Each structure stands twice: as C-alpha cells, then as structure tokens.
Length: 401
Ligand SMILES: Cc1cc2nc3c(=O)[nH]c(=O)nc-3n(C[C@H](O)[C@H](O)[C@H](O)COP(=O)(O)OP(=O)(O)OC[C@H]3O[C@@H](n4cnc5c(N)ncnc54)[C@H](O)[C@@H]3O)c2cc1C
Ligand code: SF4
Ligand code: SF4
Image 1 (cartoon, rainbow, N blue to C red):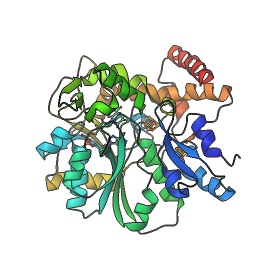
Image 2 (cartoon, rainbow, N blue to C red):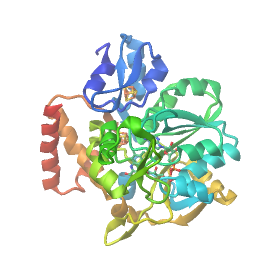
Image 3 (tube, rainbow, N blue to C red):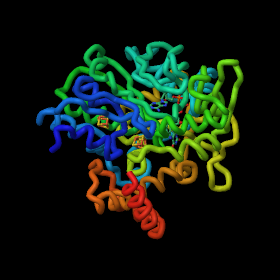
C-alpha cells in the first residue's frame, strides 16, 4: 500500500476534501488545497506509516462508506433507513426566509444550542474575507446560525478541525454533506468510546460543484471574484435566487433553475457521480427540499420555504419531536411516495452507481468500498439502455482524467 495513499486518492478524483485526514494526522502530513479544477482535495506531503494507513482505511470516504442500516423496504433502499419523515419550517420567520428551504435545519440547530445546551455547531458558511469561498465555523448563537443558513453549492471541508473540537467539548452538533457525515460516523465508531454527545446532521446532496461553477456565474454577471462583496447560491425565499453584490452595491441575480440547473450541476466533482449516499444515511437527521409537485416534476416557483425532514435514528426522531413540541419548527405529515417525483434525481443517481463502478473496475481504477447499499438491486430500477450508456459514458470520462 502506498505511503502516499492520500495523494493517490486525490489524483484518482475520489477524495471529496472532507478534511478529516488533516484533522487526525495534522497539517504537517496532509493539507486540504484547491486543485486546478476548483475542488478541495487532500494533498499529502509526508509519508504515512502502517498504523496511520490502517486508521485512514477505517473512515476515509474515498476508501469506504457504509450504510449503517440497509433497511428492507424498497423506499429505504432508495431514500435510506428512517424512523420518520415530515416536511416543516422554522417558526422564526427570519430563519425560514434565510434558510435554503424552510430553514428547519437551522431552527433545529438553534433549538439544540439554546434549549438542549449543546455547546456549539460545527458548520460551514461564507468566508469572512472572501464572498465566494467557504470557511468553517463553530456557531454558538442564533446570529451565527442565521449568518450560515442557506446552501453553498461549492467545496467545503467541515471536518478540518474536528478532532480538536471533539477534544475540547462534550456536546456538539455537526452539519456536513453526507460524505462528511459518513466519514465522521465511521471515525467516531473507530475511536475508544468517549463521553462525547454528538448529533450528526446532513442534507440530501446532488453533488459538490467546483469553484469554477461559481466563477462561471460571476462571468455571466460580468464580475470577477475580487469585485464581489456578497454571494449567495439560494435562500432568502424558496428556492430564492443566486446573487452577487458588487463593490458598487449593485445586485446581480440568477434564478435557481438557471444557476443550479444550467451552470453548477455541470461542474460536479467526479466522486459525486459514483456516490450512492446522496441521501445522507449516516446522519441522525437529513434535511432537503420538500418541493411541491404538479405534472410529475418539482415545482420551483417562488413560495414560502418547506424543508424535508428525514429522522434516521431514534435520537434524530426524538430531537425533531421535541423541537416541534417546543415550537422551534412547524411539522406536517409527508408521504414518502412523493419523493420519487420531487427528488427523482437521487433515484436515478443511486441506480446508476453500480454500472458506473463496473466502468471503474474495467479500467483498474480504485474507488471506495460501498457496503450495505444494495447497488445491484438499485440498478435494476433503471432501464437497461440507460445503465449501459452510462457505463460507456463513465469509461470515456475516466480515460480523459
Ligand atoms: C452541495 C449541496 C447539494 C444539495 N443537493 C440537494 C438535493 O439534491 N436535494 C435537496 O433536496 N437538497 C439538496 N441540498 C440541500 C438543500 O439545499 C438544503 O440545504 C436543505 O433543503 C435544508 O434546507 P434548510 O432551509 O432546512 O437548511 P438551512 O437552514 O438553510 O441550513 C443549511 C445548512 O447547510 C450547511 N451547508 C450549506 N452548504 C454546505 C456545504 N457546501 N457543505 C457543508 N454544509 C453546508 C449550512 O452551514 C447550514 O448549516 C443540497 C445542499 C448542498 C450544499
Ligand atoms: S479523509 Fe476526506 S479529505 Fe482525507 S483523503 Fe479521505 S476524502 Fe480526502
Ligand atoms: S454527492 Fe456524495 S460524494 Fe458528492 S458531495 Fe454529495 S455526499 Fe459527497
């Protein structure tokens, strides 16, 4: 096994830049950097010994991802195991407005720190000095949660400082993409039991767009990064607009359908194409968009936000119930069958992973070991013609890397 294994993972485009390796081994060994394609990846500068490699293999999401509970129902196969599903929104109107969907995720964070005495939330948000970059925050107040509400469709490394935070706190909440949360769940399972109380929160994730996607949006506004004092991908309404505010105070905006649908989703990280866990199966609670639907498609017309709330563990279910009882969120029943219409992308994405991995195997490329996802069974939900054309498409793309 290579002593520079982390560089191998980054060069194979399967490192997602979660930052956990930097946190565990220290930045004298490995550091998250921006690569030439505009993604965050780990860059290793010192040899790892056999013990470090053994540790890495237990939790790095470029090496292994495990679905904690496979579930037996067909809907769990697709959407991950769950204790309950609802739609809902933050009862604090500012949080609902600023949030990506209904602000329910931020409202639950607020409930956990203000009422359940969690010490803080590990989350990402807009960097203080650069409007188009993300930074990490340990949020301890509603002001910070409001500042960091809203989806940032660009690279993030929420785990870059996680071991120090764990060492210094007893009750924390962590928000990350499904791959970040799976890495942290696997890491926590791999260390000796400690008295840490940690709630893991994620969101449905179609993939991380590169910073080139953000730059493309800026170029449509005739702006450079240095011209921009504020940049949001969405939120401030549902779905809200992507917008930039330039140094002269002018606002330039693009609809969600145009920014995500025509620009950002064309710049997704390669690792995301073979991800079977965009539904966040390792989280205690996964949030998403509870889109309305008419005509069999999600309805993106502007309205008051509604988050999808999937409680995956008993802990997650109890938190959602008590947050609703306390009045932090408003909940409505949600029919899981509706997900096939409003989150169709995830059904297709999951169903295609099996064939895409065959392409990787044919070319002798390494890829993460995905355990408990029933990928073959999922592939049978996709028409065979689409499966085959995707396999060839993946082969072509890998040859180009
Ligand atoms: C890359 C990406 C892809 C997504 N894909 C889908 C999808 O396919 N389907 C879907 O329904 N929803 C998707 N979402 C989630 C969706 O946009 C909302 O975040 C979710 O609906 C919850 O909304 P909310 O108003 O309850 O959350 P909010 O109250 O707005 O809270 C959002 C939280 O997400 C955190 N966050 C934002 N961006 C990132 C990031 N890049 N990395 C780590 N943490 C971040 C913030 O720190 C904040 O804590 C995606 C989000 C991201 C960032
Ligand atoms: S732990 Fe995260 S950042 Fe490090 S190599 Fe694995 S995926 Fe990349
Ligand atoms: S699609 Fe999967 S690999 Fe990509 S960012 Fe989302 S959870 Fe991580």
